[in-house]
Amino acid sequence: MRTALFDFELPPDRVALRPVAPRDAARLLVVRPGGTPELEDRAVADLPDLLHRGDALVVNDTKVIAARLRGRRIGRGASEPAIEATLHQRLDGSRWRAFVKPAKRLSAGDVVRFGDEGKVCFLGQLDATVEAKGEDGEVALAFAFHGPVLDQAVDERGAMPLPPYIRRAPDERDRSDYQTMFAQMEGSVAAPTAGLHFTDALTSRLEARGITLHKVTLHVGAGTFLPVKAADTAAHRMHAEQGSVTAQTADALNRVRRAGGRIVAVGSTSLRLVESASGDDGVIRPFEGETALFITPGYRFRVVDVMMTNFHLPRSTLFMLVAAFCGLEVMKRAYAHAIGAGYRFYSYGDACLLFRP
Image (cartoon, rainbow, N blue to C red; front, side, top):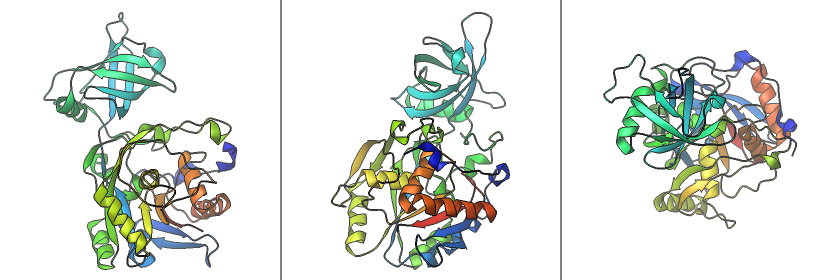
């Protein structure tokens, strides 16, 4: 499909720079294709009333790391240009793939020293060698530290990797704001943002309603923010992300489906992982590995019936996914309504609850 079909105009003032408090006070646009009404303005706190007893929520328990590092190139002449790196995929105990700016100032073999400005760090300097350069500013970095020591060094020096459309510098408040209440398994460089809306009070009400909650893990990479540059969606390459669905979770979700309950994916990450773990027979199986599933209109959903998600960028893979879920024209009407009604967009913004036609 032509990428231009997924474009729309978004006023800059619709981009949320901070989340609302409490988290479940965010607005929720309910989208029921072909329903009466098709669009309904609600709040996230209403979620228990919008689902049925026996439904199952699937949340992503990944934890965001402080993956944005600032440093300088060293050891090549008097010039030491500033470098910003956003880690996005761990290769092993000491190596990461990262997006760097400006990439043109780095070559294979260069050393980047990441600083600790404004922080008292337990560890010494953090150096990384550029092993290789790829496309779109991507490089492979080999760090001088390994394993938990490297993790600590990154946490001490790094900042939360806010998406580029939140046009302000990350601060200490973002270390909690940009983390879901389910965050447990470290490894993401972007939050599964639909999960940001949940609170203890909301999960308690869901449980009392007879709606179960199940955790999966998908470590979100910075590639999720890359725009689709290809004129046709078929030419776009998704970055692979590491995910896991345990046998216990797969069995529980299969039982829900057999009993007539619905699978409700909280966020695109949960949806893509559960769909990756499912066969054509609609059975969810244990999964451990990478997924690069790219969902566009025409995709046949295997197991997910309902999806909760935030509002996404024009021409993004995420808007393509919701268009596949509800229909492109339906989602264009929904987004036009959201813009006109003052909904807040993107990671810290409001949410929508999508039902399959």
